[in-house]
Image (cartoon, rainbow, N blue to C red; front, side, top):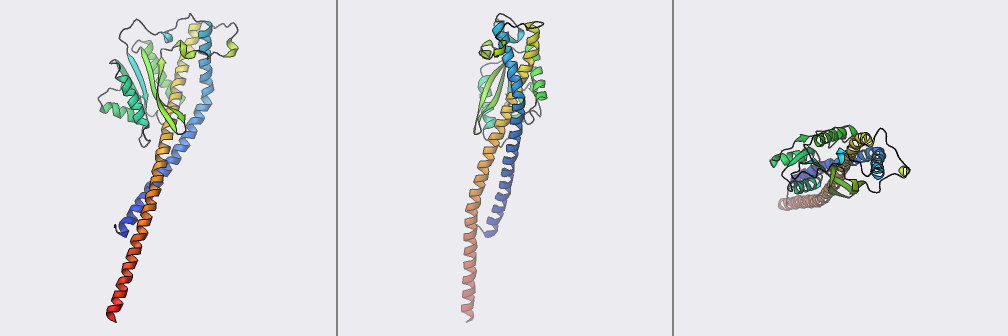
Length: 289
């Protein structure tokens, strides 16, 4: 049996760790609420952008635009992947699941360009010897419209200049407060079928787009792509905080169980020490008499 001093030291160590895990749980809970609020404030605007693009497709089905160009004539395609991970660990399998999905898709094509959001993903792929062509620092922990705009501008420019033929986004979608799943979404080129049924009722009448459909799309699509990336950043951040909350809650409960067991062991050790001292006193008294 461990000595009383050893048990006391271990209890203190676990209590200190428990304070940290509980504090991390509360911090993640606060960050999650703020992130969801930011998403709810901007979601209606980007939903309207999508419905407007859907209305244009519905009323002018024959139009051609560079953001819808599938480049079917190319036999070798250059693919870009924007992968969103966290900057830190201690969040269960959150980072592992995203990286695993990314590796599955990267293995399908040799002409890949990898864009990393989050230090965990960047360090992992660097360790594997995979080149990360662009790194967007301080974005995983601070998702906002400005940062998503900077990312979307970079990706759109590479697509327009022909360096990338297909651009995908790999992130973690929050399914419920206790469940999240890694997802892959195609950003560019846009696909007409993804807008089916999204047209707004107010566009059912005859509609004219001024000065032209191309000019309207030139303004709508970059903002729409920025909204997709912003939504993915928020979803990933929310999923990370959810995962961290569950991990820290499990760690706190585990600490409570260990403290309960150590408290019982401490009481037994103390009782044994007291019994031994009493026996020594009685033995000493008997020897004197």
